Image (cartoon, rainbow, N blue to C red; front, top):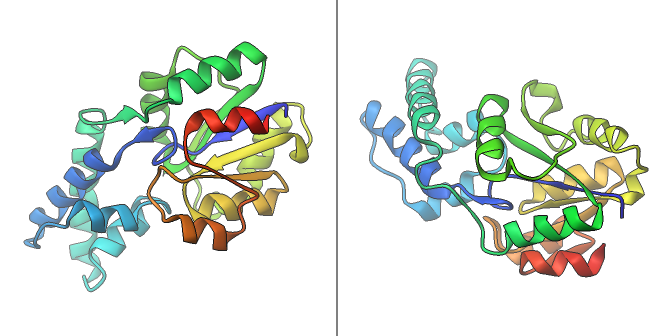
Length: 212
């Protein structure tokens, strides 16, 4: 394999505590009760607007916009407060870099959050690309940004893996023709990842090395 593209939330970094704090700040801003971490965990994976809509499915548009604004403000200021790499990730990235495997990050998190978080947590490794959500029609599972990254790696899709923790990541990989690897330590159940059609499932970051 020439390259590995990682999802961010639930794959490289445990972002759930900071996201849950932001969601609950937004819910409080519109007078709604808090959500549990288990609920927020199920909502993550398809970008901020979808996340907020799942948290507030019955809201009118003005209420929804107020909630989104509050969530964005809180997360922008506090996204790094409780966010850490998952155990084994830094060792995996050290090994991949040592082997000359190219790495990149592709997230449905807004680009303005994806870049500083990735630089803050993973800035010591060379990354071919760091891409977050910027255009609605290119959000995962649309394969175009992933294929752009593959081209920047000067690789064929079959020479690249996408490692992610959601059915959205698996669908993105399949749509692009890259190898779909499901990370079971993230925010989706194993059964969901199998049903999505992952080529491989790994239960710990180091297991990826056996697939390279």
